[in-house]
Length: 190
Figure 1 (cartoon, rainbow, N blue to C red):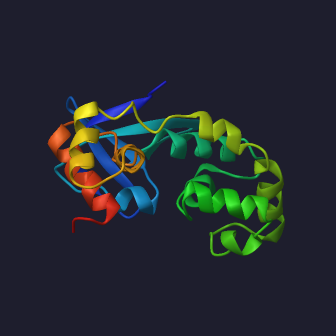
Figure 2: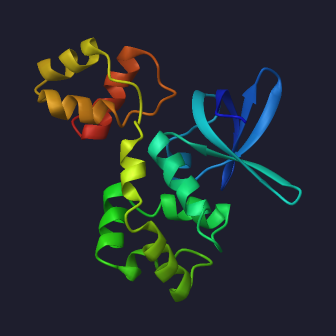
């Protein structure tokens, strides 16, 4: 229903942001990982998932398509609500989660509020084999050639340049800002 919101972050709280879009403030719940990357009064594009259930209508926001796809898959597991699904998406990277599932590493999920041993076992069982669906989803459109060329001129391999650019949040559209963010992500720039 609401695929994304593009607007200014008017307020940032512990577990949500208010995104102002054409005079309307949307309350969007986000993981701690996403919230760390957002700041007030900045323009942003957040991918969203509208959660509807018995009188509840909440928006959940993500910077990347893969995060949103994982969130949707987790919601499909009985007993996992949106808050737990959001917490799981922010525990670690996709690769760390995939490894935890493949190796049946239940300790990876410890510390997530509301998840007991049985729920963790259920999550591992249900997610086994579902990572193919997530991997097929693109993070963002193909990086622009000029951005890749710029990073290559700064010493990146072509593959590494594309990889780092794919991690730049979708809301950043200017090539200059995308390159700056890519450098920060790669650790070459503080």
